[in-house]
Amino acid sequence: MKLKEYILQFVRVIWKDQVGSAVIAGIILFIITAIYSAIKSFLTDTPFIEIFKTTFFYPVPLYIVLIIITLQFCIHLLFNMIRKSRQNRKITVQPVDTNAEVKKKAMVGEYVLDDLIYNLRLHEFNAYGDNSAKTNAFDVFMWTYESLTLGISDTKETPAKVIFLKCIPLFTSVGLVRRKSGIISKYYPTTLGVEFYTKVQHKIKIAGPISKP
Image (cartoon, rainbow, N blue to C red; front, side):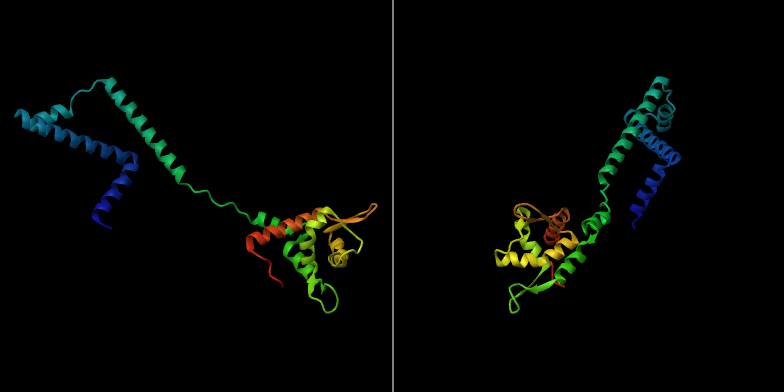
């Protein structure tokens, strides 16, 4: 650190101290008086010491002293307000601890979201027979969800519905789907099913496609 920086740091430390600041103020006042006396002495051919004594010990009326003290107090108060305002602007908002929120999003009812996805994917079977491609309950739930919100009847009308109905025992056991009886009984997503689908979609949006186990 250079000498100039040492001096500036020393002055800052002293200025923050009440006694030190008074000493610095006195020194500044002395220097100003000396400069004024030197200039006036040069212009009027009057001895420097005489002018300095007259200026430095000039009797000041009490009301002027009170005005100066009041002004000093107001200036000091103003500087403190400005300093605090700048400090408040510099304060960065600390990120909120989102661990609780993350854990909340990672749960679906009483199930951990990833665990539920994993277990649904374990329920794997051939879609259209022994020699057909394999699918799993998770994929079936995701691609039938839109139709499920409108209601899927339990009649085996299409191959896709046959695949869905193969997963019904699992869906109902974990609480993703409910059967509503009527003239034509239909299956609808439960509140848990809606939450599961929403959080899976959120997970895909944030982390990308969910990889298979």
